[in-house]
Structure formats: C-alpha cells, structure tokens
Image (cartoon, rainbow, N blue to C red; front, side, top):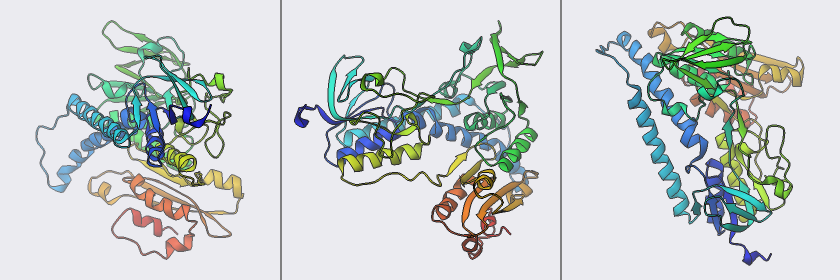
Length: 453
C-alpha cells in the first residue's frame, strides 16, 4: 500500500498519558494522527489512578493537621468529615482533567474516536462500535494496564482501585488484599479518615522493591497508627452477609475478618486482551506485556508500544517520555531513546517514602562489600511540636571506591518533593563529597541530605 493511501500517518490505541503525548508531538511534526479511546481521555493516572488518589491523600492529611492544630494555638470546634464532599470534589477534578486532555488533542488537530479499536493487520485497525476499518502507516499501542482480580470464591464482592473512588460512603472497616504501593497508599488514606484497616498479604513483606530499612520503618509507623496486618495469609473466600457486610476468610485463620469494603490491590497487568495482536505476529510476555526494543518497536515493524502495556517501567512519567521519544524519532527525525537508569519513584503512604537508584541490597549484590551506607534517623520538627514520636529516615548508598552516589532513599514528610531534586544529583553522577560541599538549608528536613556522616 502506498503511503498516500493510508487514512492516517499514525493511529494510536489508548488516550492515556503516553498516547496523548505521542499524538500531540506527532501532530506537531506534521503527521496526520487519530487516537481511539474506549473510556475517557486521560488514562489511568488522570482518571482512576495517581491524580485522584493524591487528592484523597491530601484530603486525609487534614485529620493529622487538625489534631496537631491545638499545639500551635488553634481551636477547632465541631470537627467532622464528609466522604461524599471529598469524593465528589475529586471526581469533579477528574472531569476537568478529562476535558483538558480532550482539548489538547483537539487543539493539536488529533482526531478522536471514543470507541474500542482492535488491530486487523500491520497497517489497519477496526473500530468496535461503528465497524469502521481504518488504515495507518504506523500504529502505536498505549492501552496501559488494568488491576488484577485473582480468582477466589466471592471475588465478585470485592473492588479494585478502579472502583474505590466511587464509594457511596466511607467504610468503617476495610480489608485490603496486597501490600504494594496501591495497597499501602489506600491503607493510609482510609486509616487517616477513621476507617479500621486490615492489610492482608500472601508474603511477609510490604513494598518489596523499596529499601528494606524504609519498608520496616513504614511498617512500624503504620502499625502504631492502627493499621493491622495479616502476613502469609492468602484469601480463601469472601461471603456477603444479609446486612451488606462481608466475611473475609483467610488461609490458616479460623475466624473471618468482618469488612464493609474489600479492596483487592494485588497488582496490575498490561491491557492487551482482545487487541488482535496475534494477527500481526506479536507474542505477549508472561504477564501479557508487549515486548519492544529500545525504539519502542514491537515484532511488527509498523506497530509500536509505549507505557504500562510494554515490558518496561510502569510509571506515568516514563510513558510520557516514551511517547514523546517515539513521536520525535518517527516523525521529527530525532534519534532519541529513553534512558531507564535512576528513575525516581515514590509511595504516597502515610508517611510517604521515595527512592532513586540502587537500594542497599542491590548495591551489595552489584558491588559486594565495596559500598558505604550513610543514614540520618531524625524526628521531623513538625512531629516534635505535634507530640508525635514518628521518625524520618534518609539513606545514601555510595560506591566506596569512587564516592559516586548510587542511590538515595527516604521516608518522612514531603519525601517525594525532596527526592525529585536529589534525583537530579544521582542521575548526574555526583559524589558524596559534592553533597558534603553543599551548605545545609536550615531548618529543613532536606538538609539531612548534606549532613549524613
């Protein structure tokens, strides 16, 4: 098929963070672009993920702020919380962002099809509702990931992170299955808002990819805040009672846990089901992910993939960078790829933790004993005045030979905000001496980064 016979230069399946960025940049390079989205423009992060979740985190923080207010001279009378007010405000902001992302596509002359698209050939897709066949020189898959719901008796009574933003009322008792970042974040939110929270996990570790010292500190703090944990306990079944509550039965536990909401947060899988990838010879990985090379190309030369649907890093900023790199390379003539070293990440638990680069365990595995670990274990000033015993912990992992900083990890108030700046230093390859040569900004928690000895 000659190039001029294609309906579009680029057809994007999925209008999330990666798909929207790729569409906008490709169009700015003069490409004719269309995008298909079966739900709402904006994707997981904007519609049912990190953005609305962070707003819930902000809302839940007021419980602690109001409790501490008296120590700062404030008198707060008749303190109460209304879940529907917070929920509806969050959902209203999601609507705003959906409109903003839609306007971005329109302003960049990207045609939108609000229906599901499946691949029918190397250069063709079919729209599910209209049945229309569309051709494109290139196809980009950016369908993201979807929450996993394991199979067990009564799983139909459980919700995932997709539905948690739409609860009619604040549950008094919440059982959360899983101990990854989504589970720990919602455990903190509901605990702060006054719910009784139980986290159930098949293993005995929380947040397995993060530094062990930080994980242990988070576990200690959250237990002191009232979150209960059941480790090494698989779900057996969930039974709905006549009064609308649920009995959650766990392996090895004689008595069930009573809950008003059961949230399953045991991971996410790439959303590749029914895309038609088999028609173009694309074989999926074990988790259903699409394998791609360093240019985001799949096994089919005209089809590319970016974001959580691939076998790379599942983070929104990564999807955005991948989408832009793809569009710049294919339509802008720029030979650019994404470097996956030293990508910062955070967990908006309460307190939050954040990290960049190697953990202590990873560094010891890579460098043997030839590393140095610096740390600062301190009580944030705010906690002192608020009569809270919780302590922050910062760690710096250093190559003992060169002095290069291999990783920085922290838990405590505002850790994600502080780490973003520190990540620049780690990415740039700065040394411990460079940190030591920097004058502390006092009084702040961030100054601990340049005071570790």
